[in-house]
Every structure is written in C-alpha cells, then in structure tokens.
Length: 120
Image 1 (cartoon, one colour):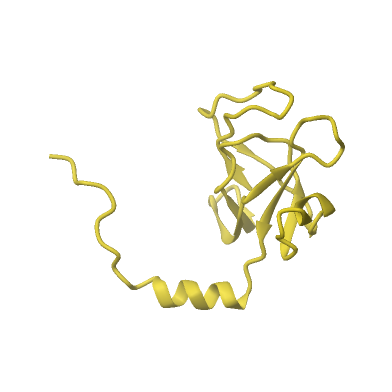
Image 2: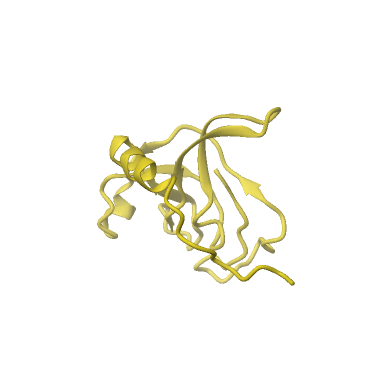
C-alpha cells in the first residue's frame, strides 16, 4: 500500500508531513473486529501504522519495485487502532473482486468530462 500520511493520530501526535510517500506491506487478514463497527464486514485489513492522508491510496498486488508496477486490488478506506494506544495501527480496504472488475470495465471507456480547467 502507498500513501501520503499527514494527519494526527487520535493521541494528537503527528509523525508525518504528507510530503513524503510511505508504504506498508505484508499479508492481509480478514476484517478486524474494530472495522466491523463501521459496517464494512467485507473489508480486508493490513497492519500499517500511518495517519490520515494515507486513505485513498492504492493497494498493489504483485508489485515490482524494479518496474514500479503492480495490480491495484484495493484502496485504503479506514484507519483504526486495534491495541487501544490511541494510534492508528491497521488500515482496511474493500475487497476488489469480480463485481469490482465488472464496474470498472463498464466505466473505463466512458468519458466523464474534464475534471479541472486546463491551464492557459
């Protein structure tokens, strides 16, 4: 996973500036019980001690550092504290499955229009 954390932990500490990309890696697990309170039972979780700003960042499968390529198989959705020390220590993502691929394939060739004005 990749992102640019910049926010505070619940305890008020702010270890990141948002200017430098951070990453986490490892084995995902089924949804942690802390995320269940957000009604996201289908999320997958990863141990990752980051802060706000990291959310929305990609989760890559089969990432190659040499090629800087991988398959996007999730996006950071939630950050949560599993050990009660007032610091985020896990992140979660919706599980990208065949249904996600169907939505993506239906939308990928549909022009949605210009998002931001072109510079003059």
